[in-house]
Amino acid sequence: MSPRQQFIFRQFQNLFTLYKGEIPFYHYLNSYFRKHKNLGSKDRKIIRELCYRTFRFGPVWKEHTIEEVFLWNIPDEKEKNDLLKQFFKGLARVEQIPGFKYPFIDLLSEKFNNPEYFHSLKHQPKLWIRISGESADLASFRKEMKDLILSEEERGRFICFGIKNGTEVESFSKDIVVQDISSLQATELIQVKKGDKVWDICSGAGGKSLFLAQTHPKAFFYASDKRKSILDNQEDRFNKIGLIKGKQAIVDLEFPVERLKFGDEVIDSEEFDVIIADVPCTGSGTWAREPENISFFDPGELEKYVTRQSKIMQNSLPFLKTGGDLYYITCSVFRSENEEMIRYLSNSKGLELEWMKYIEGYELGADTLFIARLRKTI
Image 1: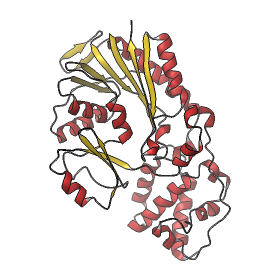
Image 2 (image 1 turned 180 degrees about the vertical axis):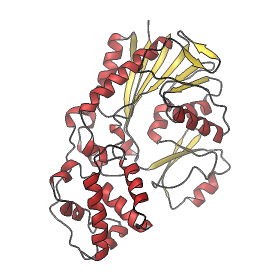
Image 3 (image 1 turned 90 degrees about the vertical axis):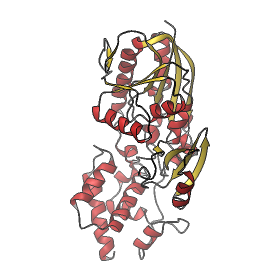
Image 4 (image 1 turned 120 degrees about the horizontal axis):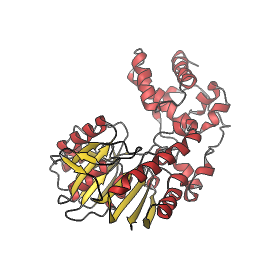
């Protein structure tokens, strides 16, 4: 190895020795870079690329030496990766590289136990944004970002762009919203009528509520989360595109709730026409985007997620009107969080399943989501 290759290898070795999957690797790597200010921008780019390529081999890398794994990342002749080809110049490519094996096949929904899905985990999804087709900035966005736009999809009144990851876009125009196209497709399936009261019970940053507020201006939107910082972020997103935010409340639905307080409005009975439950989950449908989870996810955590999901459903359903609709959503491909949870809800919670489906985002370079609609019958 050249001195520079040895230097980068030592950083790679440090990272794969120290990182244990306790936080998303993106955050861990940024923290590492902040502590190692001697790494230049090109060094950081190479290290990031090497690490994520390694995670995409699956946990098989744990069975080999760091030296072997490092050399697995030498691109073959067909790859268009000039950065790594230049970096590895002078080193021979390893021909005997273990094949990828998904470690949690017994947890998967049957739908995803196939080579096409496993192959998709080897590729980074795109960063998806949407912008109104009537935006004054649309033409200038296309022109300025033409080298970064990988795909374009028209979805109703919005144009969705799949762009290169790491692109800074939110400062470009107030009309731009970052939202994975699979999330948008799921939100399009949510039926809201004029005058409906809609409660987004695990709202996160509010991408779905934001979309629905834009497309259904005469409905009433309520959002809750147990984290105030998340709700503050949601408010900022609403303000950025000039929308009046819905009413918000800090609510932890893992515990029984007698009443909800949205500002000066108190709700203590069946008042919502629609509940959107994008519940906390393993996120296994996003692991192409965060491939470290394929190596570090603990299957023992799955039961904890399922328990949380059932508690959240149990504690939110008293506020849904009889005849109202519950939309249950995850970004998981595990059957216990999806099909089996829907079976549990429809068998024991006064809910009738209307439909359920997966949104197979990997076909577009996006995340994979599950969504089901259930109607409250009693």
